[in-house]
Structure formats: structure tokens, C-alpha cells
Length: 412
Ligand code: MLT
Image (cartoon, rainbow, N blue to C red; front, side, top):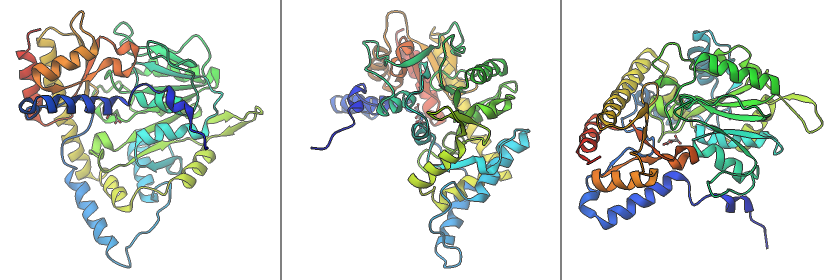
């Protein structure tokens, strides 16, 4: 008989969002009337339609596919040159950041990229993650066999957990010990925290000293409103030698259902072979990407390209303003009922302390039962998330306002 990948048996119950979905479904079956009122502020999935510039470009691309002359079969696995050039120009060069088009790899999502990157990193690496954390970083390391079993708190043996608390503003400092790979996410999912330039400089200095690789997830960078906060890790001198950056069109252009993202692997980023030779990661990622992936569809890449047109930029800004308007309403509502509120200023997530004595899952149940609102329990993001819950601002304005009303109607 063939053998299974036993590492999967180390994984905890289920991936957080399917687990929430399961509980909401069970609630709906038991309470069919209340189920009709449910408002979902759990998973961070966009609700507003794609920008008009994007859909126009996609329509045109569909028409292209209907003609012999403009038909596109397999594209370059790394992404079409015109999209890679547009990304390099608008997201980096125009902002004075050095990233070349051939260091950009277009993909079908940051979640996939975050997991897939492990293909080119050795299993002997000591991996650090923050706590709370986007669960994909942890689970993909478990699946790849980079951890031992989880203890009672859910912490996996072998991972280094960097505690993020209200005291450190939910931004971890570099550890005292040596780690080889570090996952950082700013603006942060789930806490909504952002790192200052000085904090990122400390991380780059640590990575240089320890010859570590930073996996920098910047999927929410478009939500940064504070002009002093860096959007890219490459704004920090030296980061090209230590960091890979993950970016997505999901949360700025609303591509969660359309799928398009990219990662930047600078050619100057090196890591060690088992024999101790220092080699660039770029050719390994190019090899991995071209072997295991056949590229994002032509139609979707044309849509992504349209985000960089003047109309596209304007329409994306309107989307961001819409979601951040929701964030303000939700932040203020949580604060008005006496809860301690974090995030929601440079990120579409609001991170809220539960009332004393209430666990994250108890809060989830209360919000579902008493307000018919789905939130995400903080403990689903790690032990340090216990005592918090996350409200997603991805919703219609009417729903955000209704959630605010219902929160105020709960007996806190
Ligand atoms: C979330 O709710 O944390 C997001 O949906 C994460 C993701 O984009 O995968």
C-alpha cells in the first residue's frame, strides 16, 4: 500500500475559514429565520464589483481570444511581459524602488505563493512566524514536514513564535536566537498593524546578520494611509539581499474570485546549499514556477494590467476608500461599546479585545447568536490571538452600518 504524507495528521481540526463556514452553516440550519439576517465580516473577501477599467480590459481580452490573430494559448509561466513591466514601473520604479520586471513572477494568488515558496527552501531551516499569524504560513510548513507535533496551546514544535501583543503594538521584534526564514505580513492580517521604517530596518539588519530570508507578505499594502509607513520591504536599503515580497491584486483590485498576484524574487537574494555554497533563489523559483505552473490566464492578466491605467488607479482608490470607510464605521462602533480596538486605519481588518472573561470563540458565538454577524475568532490565528476577534471591513456600506447598529444593540 502507498504511504500518506503523515504530516497532514499533525494539522489542527480544519483550516480556520472552512471551520467558521461549518459553524455558520450549522447555526443557519438550526435558526433558519436568523440565518436570513446573517452578515459576514469573517473571511476577508471583497464584496464590491471589479473596477470598470478591469472588466472593460477583460471583455476586450475575451474578444481577442475569439480571433485567430489575437488568440492566446499558453502564455509565459512567469506572466506576460507587459504585465510584469507595468508592475515594475508603477509599483516600484515610479516610487524609487529597484525591482526589475524579470524579478516579478505573476501567479494565481498570494496564498498559493506563500505555500509554494517552501518548494525552494530547505527543510533544515529554522522558521519564525508571528503569533497571531495568517494560518497559511504555519499549515504549509506543517504539511512540508518542517515541524513536530502541536502542543496543547496549538504551537508546533520546531517553529519559533514571535509574540505580537498590544504592548508591542502587534509588531514583533527580531528574536535573540538565530532563525533562517521569517514570515512578516504588513499591513498585518489579522491585527491590522503596520511596521514603521525603523522596525523594518531592524528586521533587514537581523536578516543580513543571520543570513536569513524574510518572506514579506504585502498583500494589503494598498490600504496604507500613513505616508510614513513603507509599502514595500524594498524601501529598506539592503532588503534586496534578504527578502522576497508577496503582492496581490485581490485586495486592491477585488481579484479574490478572479485570481492574480505576484511575487518578487530579487536576483541579489542568496541562500546556502547543503554544502555551504551561496546561490541565488531566483533561478530555483523560475524553475519551480515554469515546471509546476502554466501561468495566469491572458484575460485575467489583461484585467490586472488595467489596474495601472489612470482610470484603473482612480477606480481602485474608490474601492479602497469604500472599504476604509467601512473600517472607520466598524472601529468606531466597537470603541463606542467600550471594547479596545486596534487596526482598521492602515488595513481593512479591525482587531478587537473581547470583553473580560470571554474567549475568542465565545465571542464568535455571541456575535453570531445575538447580532447574526460573523467575525473571526482571534484564537484561530494563534495562541496570542486568544481574547481578540477580527472584523473584516470588506462589505457593502449598508452592511457595515447595520453591523455597527447591531453591535451597539448587544448587552456588553
Ligand atoms: C482572511 O480572511 O484572512 C483572508 O481571506 C486571507 C486570504 O486572503 O487568504
